[in-house]
Amino acid sequence: MAGSGRQLIGGGGSTVAAPPLRAPRARRLAKDAAIFALIAAGLVYAAALLVGHQNYDWQWFRLERYLYIVHNGTFYPGPLLRGLVVTLQISAWAMLISAVLGLMLALMRASSLVTARALSRGYIEVVRNIPILVLLFLFYFVVAPIFGISRFWSGVLTLALYEAAFAAEVYRAGMAAVPRGQKEAAAAVGLTPWQGLRYIVVPQSLPFILPAMTNLAINLIKHSAIVSVIAIFDLTNEGRNVIAETFMVFEVWFAVAAIYLAVATLLSLFAGMIETRTKRFYRR
Amino acid sequence: MSLPEPPFDPPPPAKPQRLKRGDYLILAACAAFAGVLYYRLAYAIPYEWDWSAVPSFFLYYDEETGYRQNVLLVGLLNMLRIVVYATVLSLILGLGLALMRLSAQMERRASSPRAADPEKPN
Image (cartoon, rainbow over all chains, first blue to last red; front, side, top):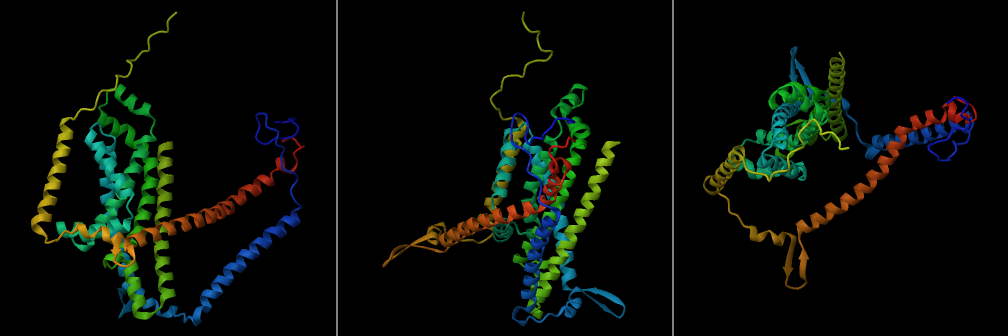
């Protein structure tokens, strides 16, 4: 745009002039520093309130034995680590089931059968509009006794059924992101609808689906905390137990939050890795 | 002069949806599930249904004061109140967070040579 003179913002006949010269650098820096100091002071004040709260007796040193114990050179996981294992087990099973069920729901949604579409649509609408906690109570107190399902599997299945509705949307969005022409081209070169799906549409939708699915897995791990209300001894419930035993309310909740944070961060790092690899693979 | 015919068949007119064999299979599966559910409910687990008690969980009639709200209605109203407050708070907090995240971008734009001196061509 050399020589175009005065630069206008929002071209196309608009006459809004560019903003005036900015304030001097020193004054801007001072303003930024003031804002930063204000926020930092607020945070420090909050932290100080927390530390001085009712003369709270911080006892971080007592936390270690609730994570693990090393006795005679053998490693024994404490309640918190055992809870983490249960959380991961529940999340893994629920992820597996919801991935399969979600795929079924997505395929039913795209089916040519009226009842399949209606069933999938109805399921997704119902599940997405009921709080997951209420779903868990419905499953644990109503469905589980009817079919004789154990406590653990009640938790797993509730999470799976809930997350499957979202997984179905992920699959559907992923397949919708592949241009329609691809499917038509597949039909034009003589592939059957199934072959077109298998070799043309699904491979191209993977870069859309994989990041969203890992996001779903992270959500699942976080949502799995609710199974503690039906007395499954996951990380959250073990945390509550340790608190009941030791009264270290602040330390234990901080530790539990840190463990969830660490697991979720690891998963999202992993997701980022997968994403870059898929992108590289498809660029070749 | 008329336009040339398109090289493809026009889409067929929408046919009324007919139930196919797969539809009947799905309906049969649903019916089977409903049957098992009914069997388990009626014969396998002892449960006394009493839907007639449910309305009184929302509203009940008091001899002296007339209709009064009961726990479920109170809970519903509390839920709505919490939703309203939380929505307002989240809008405000969200705006603050978004502005903070965007501030780097706005700073960059404000300090770009174009904005710094509008008279100078790029």
